[in-house]
Length: 410
Ligand code: PMP
Image 1 (cartoon, protein in one colour):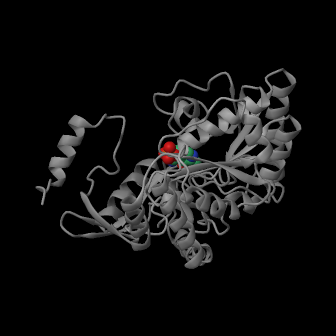
Image 2: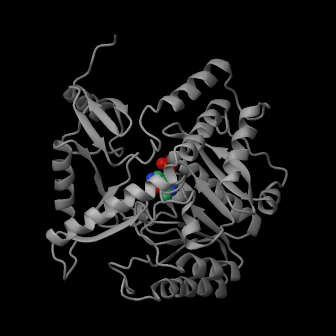
Image 3: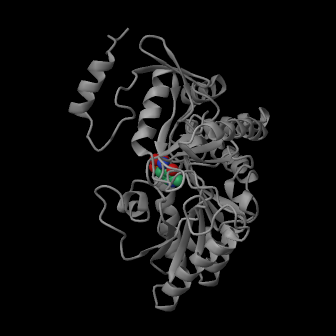
């Protein structure tokens, strides 16, 4: 047995050895030693209900996942220039969850890498540089995708948008120009997006891609009004841009359907996936059409040492099987629906709850100081999550103002 480090040891050594820009959750964090199902356990064996980890999609330490991983690690692990069965079995299963014509797979190791590759594909295939994104979005940590992530380039320490990035406004019916009471909100936000796309296209900054999550996660659980993505995708396609759906955070059945774009009745040209795909193991993917994948093959090799290795594929296959066999898509809707109803009831008693946004088991509770002015209750949100943690429930704020409690449990 290795000697145990106390929470104070870990915090002290972390401050010394881990680069400070890698922030941790909580002013007084717990020292996690174990996880199982929807529970975390700290150094004292205290359990915390995990309401935050969408990555451990089918549960912490899920026995079927750990068995699949261990079995494959004992058998074979290598890179995808070798030929082995796991990669094709997995690719077939993944493609079976997607509508036509999404059928060709790149396997990578992180959501950031998936978006980086998706942009590279879009730029190469269209021969253009410009990208249209949605204000407030986060798409990852590489140099390129930081440049399409307003959550970073407009946030603390940010340097602003690169000249090739063009934002459309966030279709937020709580704070935006078109509210919940407007049945045309989706079409109106889409029209605003179309104006941006048409303007840059007309002045020669021709767009390679429009990238959007299917429900915005880090931006604060923004559930799109009906018709939004259909209108925005149509405008992007009229301008010759490819449509990229970032499903890294919300995909793999949490919202009800396998993929969030289904809720908006659209089919993207490129879809990126990650986080829950490997239940915590670094597995991510880009899936696109045959035509786009073939146009990307100019002769230059694409190689990824870890992406699509046999162990990752065995784990990815186990995740898809569990979601299917355990009926987790329906379950996400049942439990999420019940949860949303309860939160809306709570909202009637608690003036600090300005808005509740929910789709499947992906919920956001927006806290405000004043319901009329909607002043963000950011400090209060951090305080609430510190207190819920003390009571054994793990949740954390996010959103443009860091005032939305994000609830997305295993
Ligand atoms: N896209 C979205 C929508 C995300 O939420 C994230 C991670 N928060 C990423 C991409 C980046 O994924 P990763 O951290 O695996 O690189």
